[in-house]
Structure formats: C-alpha cells, structure tokens
Figure 1 (cartoon, rainbow, N blue to C red):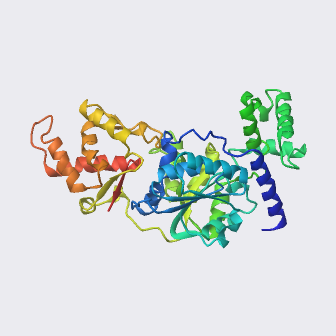
Figure 2 (cartoon, rainbow, N blue to C red; figure 1 turned 60 degrees about the vertical axis):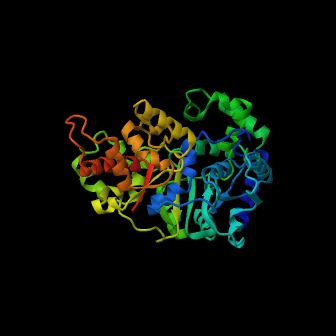
Figure 3 (cartoon, helix red, strand yellow; figure 1 turned 90 degrees about the vertical axis):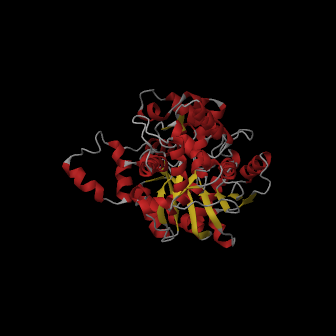
Length: 440
C-alpha cells in the first residue's frame, strides 16, 4: 500500500470512528427483510453459477468492511450453521458489530480490526466473501479485488458493489463543491457537516444540485449522518460497467451475475420487446453480457450500486438451463424449495391458502422479481412436501395426479403425460423467479 492509499485509509478510518455505519439500532432484526435475506443466502449465487444447491452449514463467510455488523447479522440469519468473520478498520464500528451479533445469540462470530489490504497475509480461506459499500473507497479497484481473491476458496464467490458514476453524478458534483470549500481536507465532523447543511439551505430551491439531491430531513440529527455518507464521504468514487469489468479482468476474476439481476434486464426498457426496430432486433441478441449491462446503465441509470457476484475463473459447473431441458432431464430432476421460503410462517400461510382454495401469493415472501406472483392452490398443495425435503419429479407428478385425478371440464382421468407437463410448466415458472431450485 503506497503513501497516498495509506493516508486515505486513515482518513476513512477516522470518518467511520466518528460516524459508525450503518446506524441501525441493535434491536432491529433483519428477519422481516426477506429480499436481503434471499440475496445474502449463499444458496442463491451458488445456484445461479452451478445449478446446484449447497448447504451453508460449516461454510466460512467473510464480511469485509463489516462496519457495525448489520450485514454480518443478515449473513448469519440467512446461512444457518455458517461461520461469520467480520473485518473493519474502525474499532468503534467493530465494537457495535460484536454487540449486535452477541445480542442475537451468534456468539461464535469473530470480528477483527483489519484492512482489506492485509487479507492475503492472514492465511484464511473463505467459501463466500461479502464486501458491501466498501470497494468504491479504494483508489485501485483491482488491488482490492486481488486481496479478496487471495483468500477465496477455488469455488468460492465474492459479492461486492461499486457506486454508479452515472446514477450518483450529482452527489459527486456536491462532493467536489465541498472539497473546494476545504471541508474534506481533514476528517469531516460536526462543524463541517453544519457548514455543508447551511450551504445547501442557502441555495435557491431551483438550483440543480439542491433540487435533485437535497431533502429537508438532512437537517435532522439522524439526517446529518446521511450528509456525511453522501456529501462528505472520504474517498468516494463512481464507476461504470466498463470500469467494473476492466477491474475483474485485471484481477483475473470471472463475472457471475448482478445481485439484483432481474432489475438489469435490458429488454424490459423497451415498450414492445418482441417488436423492436430492425437494427435493434438484429444486433441486441449478439452483444455480450458486459455490453448489455453497459447499455442498460447508459439508457436507464437508476441503480445507485453496481452490485455483482464474481469468482475464480472457470470454476463454475457447466449446466443446461431448465428452459432447455429434455423430458429425460426432467425425469431425473430433484426439486428444492428455496431455503428463504422454508420457514414456519410461509408454511402456515400456504396451508391456509390450500384449505380455503385460494391462490397463494408467493412473491409476498420473496419480493425479488418486481411483480406479483400467485400460485394456484393445487400447485401449492403439490409443493407442500418440499417443506420437509427435496422431492423427485416423479413424486411430484404422482402427487399432482392424486390431487387432480380428473379433468375438471371433461371429467376424464388425467393422463400421466398431462400431469407431467402441468407440473413441469409450474416448476419452470417458479424456478425462473428463484422460488424453487431444480437440480439435474
């Protein structure tokens, strides 16, 4: 680490000692934040990469830049039996992280005052690394990525994110204003925050930077911390998709997927995806994943974070997408309920829907697709055994035939092939949204 990087790290450490982040009360549980639990459950990215379902028990997870430990707690709740290790350069933040995990009974979690730069010398190895809201503070992206790669097991996965240069452009402009005013020459504290607030208040409401970034709540005590983390954040930097992929290439890491991948669908930006202008219809299908994501961010920069998963190159298992499976593939399939759905509250509500012959709103429990997803009560009944154990495709087809022995219109017996096709279509839809996981 060179002198400039060392000085910047010290500024960042002082800033987070002054304002530990995130400022979430210790008694606020993440158990109701279902989307967060889903994305932090390591089953999700491992399945996306390999189409295989892993057990998080005994896996070792690093929370790099853990801050006050809220994401460490989410990782612990989402991955039962996993070992959680958190590192951060702010001892004030680590003290809160230890108290948070202890409060919820995760006494075996470990927290160490350690820089990301020092990871390679630890001798540690991790199955999964979570590096949230940290990577954009490093002067050299590839150096930080290489440090995490050095302690990642061969088939391990890193989840990290970068601030979007396009989406946060106004905040970067504001930061430059306050840099010109000298407010970030030293670690910004109460006085600098007050000067920044008074400056923003003094501007006309029609001034671009105020009209598009300022909120009156920033004047409140809790809002002052938001001022610090947005307008006065030391080392903050914006990245594009091209920057992200360049960093991955330099670190020799392989892109797996965006964490919120459903919200990066380029085709969703068009009025009629199936009726595009000729040039787009001919060119878009052939562009790379990097190009698709780059085009999305240029057209519609709505994501504050470029949130992604990556890993060692050529470690993903080859697989055929479920949508392309043959009948033979399906006959050998094993179907799992996503662990984040396999909880008592969901089972209780699905039983209620089945008993009352009502559709089951499965998206209420995993709101990750952006659309409402309803499951017919008969399909819900067919899925019920998944709460106890994964099921084979033939067993689910047999259950469907017992649930629907005759066609409700013709009253003719349901043929096995008809039952097979019905169950297959239902599972394909549920797998597409991540509610069930299907292994070949």
